[in-house]
Amino acid sequence: MRGKFVAYYRVSTRKQEASGLGLEAQKTTVATYLIGREARLVAEFTEVESGRRSDRPALELALTAARVHQAALVVAKVDRLTRSVGFLSRLLEAGVDVRFADLPAIEGPTGRFMLQQMAAVAELEAGLISSRTKAALFAAKARGQRLGGNRGVTLSSKAKAKGREVQRDSAKQRASDLAPLLDELRASGHRSSAEIAKALTLRGIPTARGHSTWAAIQVQRLRARLR
Image (cartoon, rainbow, N blue to C red; front, top):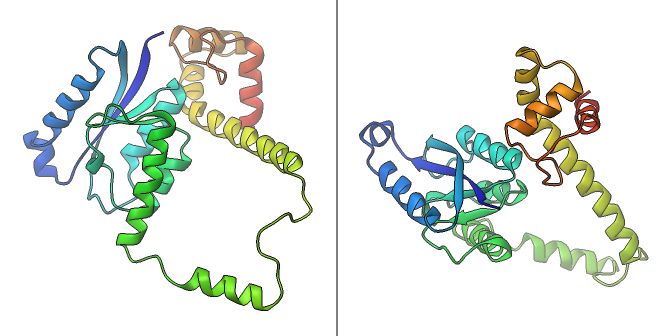
């Protein structure tokens, strides 16, 4: 099965966007990365924004598209991301595999680990690391509060609860991502769940479990979550 990717490009000024300065280089880097990987680019998004800002609407659209298509997000260069710890944390929480075209060997768990390290470095560079955590731990210890160890909750129960929470959040996020597409399909005359299921299948949108064919019951569940 061919891999699917969503490309995210960023330039800092409108002048750069108009001239193609920097943007064309990013597109060339991404195209080179995809060559030989049997990869398919399903969408491209360009942000014109300062690297220090974390409110990036084009990035949000790119992340949504990546989740909808169950694709990886590819960025031309690591420095096209940011030094903002808030932004990097948002990227880590998005549930999307992130690839760096200039570091082709970094992907999957290794890529996520790299993002985590980048977030840690960004926090350090921004001067956000302070002695407050150590002071809080010291105060808690002085009150006799036990730090670390077993709190009386078994690991299995905690793991199960966390798993259910993750599944619920994932299902809600998936429904939210697909909501605009469902509205579009209804507006174009696809009314029944069976019709919408067929349309989603024809458009190549995978199901939550990655299957290529939708069933009416899956659309019904999706609608129920949106209600």
